Image 1 (cartoon, rainbow, N blue to C red):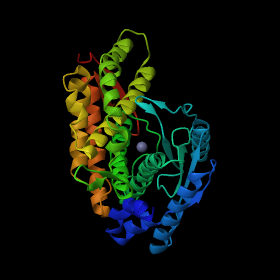
Image 2 (cartoon, rainbow, N blue to C red):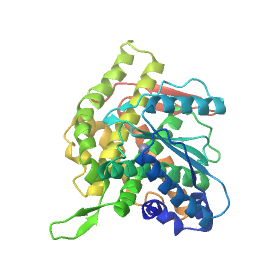
Image 3 (cartoon, helix red, strand yellow):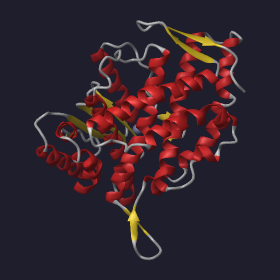
Image 4 (cartoon, rainbow, N blue to C red):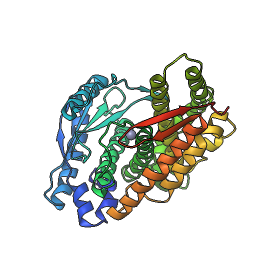
Amino acid sequence: MWEFVRGIFAAAEKGPRDLVGTFAAMSVTLDILDTGPFGEVLSNVASALESIRADGDDSMGQVAVMSTTEFDVEVGRLQREIASERGSAGLPVFTPERLGGIVAGKTLARALDYQDVTIVLNGNLIDWSNPQGQVSGLAILAHELGHVAIGRARYASGVLEGEPPPPSVTGTEAARSLARITCDEFRADLIATSALGTAASVPLDDGSTRPATIYDLVGSRHSDCLRDVLAEEVYPGWPDTVDAYRTYQIDLEELIRRITLSTESVLSIVAHAEAHAFAGRVDRPLQANSELRGAELYVAPAWDRLLAILARRPPVPTTLSEVRALEDHIASEGTAAILQMWKRLGLTVEEHGNRRWAMRVSEPMR
Ligand SMILES: [Zn+2]
């Protein structure tokens, strides 16, 4: 178990001391709503993280992990709590259903520094009572811990300094946030797969074994769903939504809301499907669907630019300057990729300074 958690932070341990400190400052407090094997597994993770922390510096960070069958209720409660602490207004009700399945875990940070984080695992989806369930539970936990590592590294890199505080207001801010969310999902899946490789192996025909990957666990689940998403949600869905505004069926606010939400869910599926395939060394799912209009016109040009950024560096680089370079790249090139995708959809973002902006709407490409 120690090796498993260590695998997640292995990259960080090679880095300079300030980055090591950032990652090492992880203690886990247990808030166990489910009893049984889950408690035992988490206790092991907790002591492993505690020992890493003892090796590091004194800066305190806290990651609370809980698994609950009341997943959506608990996530909703925490989201409202954090929003009210930040003084931000009403949030949409949290629902665990997404394109491609049910959310298995959620990482909630109290602040941008990711020093006080709660990871909520969906107790309805993880069966800690058997080895198979434990392995998939560990992959989910590693993915969520990956978000913590990425979030801390991003904050420590300084890339957020000078940026307006969340939530996003302008179109460019929304595109930058979506670029980060999409890249984070890909990166967290790669972190999960390297953690999984240290915890589980797959027997080969010649009697030897190889490290398990996330593809061994989930296979092509996301790729299968991606095809339907591209053939409905994206096309004709996206241009139809833009035309609904152009024919006075919805207002501009609703158009922006729908396209932003859908961009997030579609690109998240793409990120997971592509990360799983990357880990399993099988063909890229988006390329396999390249004949679909939704892929060709909209999703592939944007994702290819994001993947080009991600393919160049490890999911969490080992030095702060490399983290900074990756984050700068995501913030500039990644944001541009999403703005360009929207432009093809007839949606052009104009920034007017002081967080004032406009969205020009024209005929979408079909
Ligand atoms: Zn995630």
